[in-house]
Length: 477
Image 1: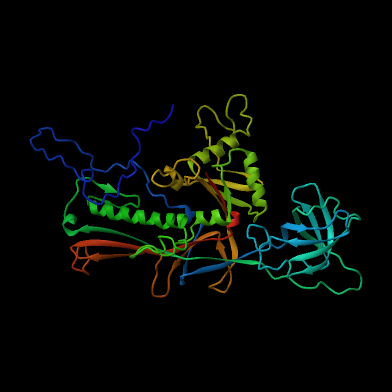
Image 2: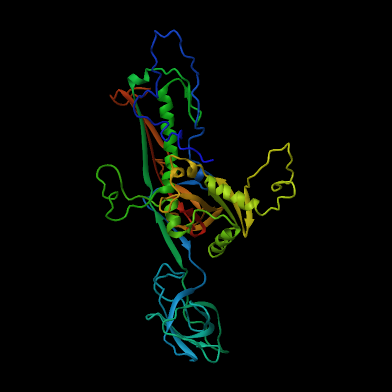
């Protein structure tokens, strides 16, 4: 039976900016002899409404004193080109190959423009269309033209050469004659420099002095434990909780402002240059599963195969929405024989007096994968309310490598160990902008302006650093 659309969940249960009938009791009919019974405490019908927790689980926070955060990540150790061409005739013992993918970042070995092949190195060629592979030794290199000459080890050279063929080549060693000079030329380390900029996040709660004198009739409470009979106190705490959530969701969702964009040219106090959030970086430099989420072991084998080609991090955590979580449970349960009397997976101690655990917390398939529910992807007021259609922005999960990695910090000027995901906030000896809050006005204890109100201000300036994005997997539509 399908879940009916009506009645449904309320997408705006709070955050009202003005007093409404939903905020206060309005039954003042004293002629009614039957007075209503009222519950003293407000009922928490949506449970814990906050969505922040992801970055606290996988990352760390550390200060930064600059408008720009830069770091270097290692490049590949070995060289491979996947777009090489030659005009050699069939059955020739030698050939000249041109490397066409030196400056194309879509290929494996994008670099500064010089080919990383030297005389004396041994190489293997494979036709991209399949059906042929050869081994040869490099006899000459022209770095200006990005060409190199080879002599084949087999007697007839390329037996099926065609001018339009594309070839993949990688280096597997070298060979020199007795009594000869050493290798000519050397290679520099291939580092990639990445950067990100912090953004300023603000919020504010305001209540007039007159409204502060109004006492509510119902005891209220919030997720951080604040409670009492003052409605404005509840609203202030909810503003703080909402701001805490935005500190995380902004780091997940932020995108840089493109040149000539409206955000970059926005008038007034809003807009600037944006920032690179986790989803943006993984879409740009990481791995993306575009079919919603994997549902079979064969699907996960494809993921493992891609991770083999990246950093091969041994332990990974998959933060998932509810449907993805169930699909993993069903996939793992399907590997069990179920036994003669019903479900038997788990601890294999299930009997009629025991609650049956139908869920899994992790599994090993090439690497260790741990599963964790991500409330942000389930919340109907956030990503959880998006349709599952293609192009809607629906995200089903994010695979995050566990542990930390070593990077060269451009600001510190040395190698440093950092979690794969971490937040940098602006701070100095005199100013800490990690989480600032201050009260202005002339009510609620504030005495620093003539405004007949209390204003609680919130501010943070921060950016998220996604190190080794090639080790992340985003599951989206």
